Image (cartoon, rainbow, N blue to C red; front, side, top):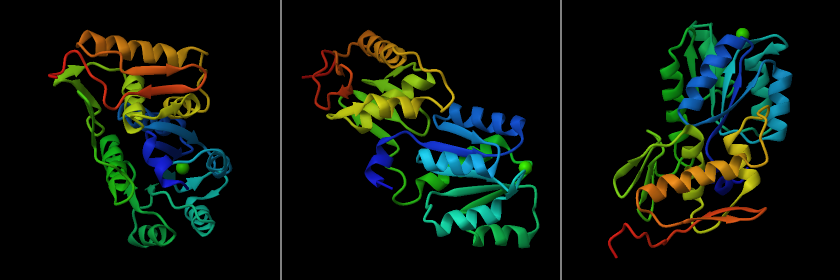
Length: 241
Ligand code: CA
């Protein structure tokens, strides 16, 4: 896994859970907190997902229709999978938790778990050394707190939708260089989302308008067919020169 690439992207979480309802609830909370999520209802689906995308963390239920999450995790760890894994289990017995941690889980929660606790534990796992950069990004007058998902320009709050915030985060992490379209699409949308051809352009336009409304210059450049670039030393008319 390329750690530089990983740090540039917004975080992507794989939820392995066979209860549709629970998976949906977890996905909603994690999306609210700015993560991109994919759900796998079986271990086979989870394996397919890991084969086609990189995930920054996995939430793993243990009782799955096609096998046991603990055995599966042990196999993944042996195969070199090294992202943090948060086990979600109905099994609270000490032995079960120890077996899970020994199999390669980084943390566990006993069901029923509060949604906010799932999100908090995940943040803690992703903050561990080497996994997360400074939670506050600053590029010229723009400031973005990746924990609270709040952005400001010259200290005035920018009201952003979830996708606008994720888009801004990507541009800020890659400030001064081109952030590829494909990378933006992968970070902002789930596997099964329909992405209209101009969806990313529309988000970029809205973000430009919001910045402009606060007196920022045009600091987001479109590189047609390639991606977007945020100037890292842009001169904003609203900034003191
Ligand atoms: Ca289950």
